[in-house]
Length: 336
Image 1 (cartoon, rainbow, N blue to C red):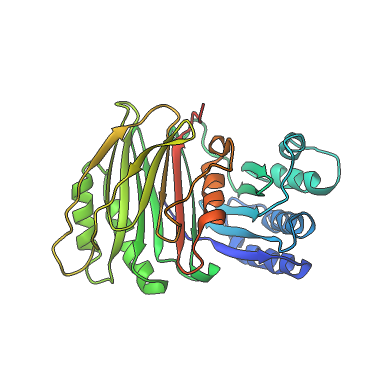
Image 2: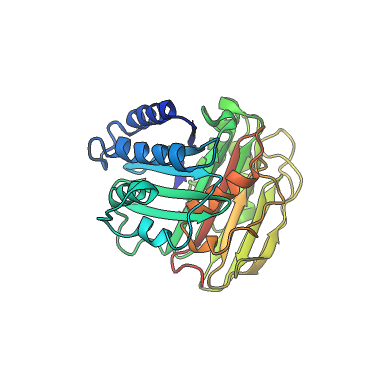
């Protein structure tokens, strides 16, 4: 499973809500899992909440087509909701009231997946519109944010996951920005999708060959085996990876210098192995995210949907001069 980049829509005034609604209408047109008008309704509620309740400066909504529907993530920088208000905001409909909670009730009732996280530093609302997820699923929960430079156009970053009994997760960053960088990252994702990922060293070589003829790039890939309680990681170039356990960094994942897809021999790789404990969370980021990111000011955020975690990291640590990607993976059993 690989996912497309997001479009970032700044929302600070009422006219921005209309622009968001129209953009979402275009994006959702013809999506088989959507009822007519639902995506526009949800986008309008999210945008209106940003205008009315976020601090001056509003916030933004990330949007992308996914599966048979669409994903919307609303992000602001405060003032946040109290934990006393949160249960009403996310309660199953119908919720009768006014203000922010009523708006989120509408979003919740029209979403196949919904989650909300709020602190004084801001609120993130996640809504996936479309068909319900299959019962049981793969045993994994994955979510990511991939925002191109400037918030629109093609991203030079990409991410992909292959969930099964074991899970493989990839983040790749094509050199530079725009269509040429996107071509490089898509070549690496195609190599990842060629078959089951069992040999990370072999995958790196395969990606290197697949990226020849492009401008090249860097990547990080992790293979997680919860049955044995182990993970294996390999990276070439500046992809940042961490395995978090109990809310704290248990492993900093290490990369090797180099660039894939150039005319030089394939860069050497060194496999890193470690313990994958129950409740562990994998986070991979491209260099559009500052490497010193942390979740110290976000209590219990790892209990939320991985896309919420990714959006929080992106909001607080993205560089304004690059494509930026965050991928978050955990077992569906959650974080104790």
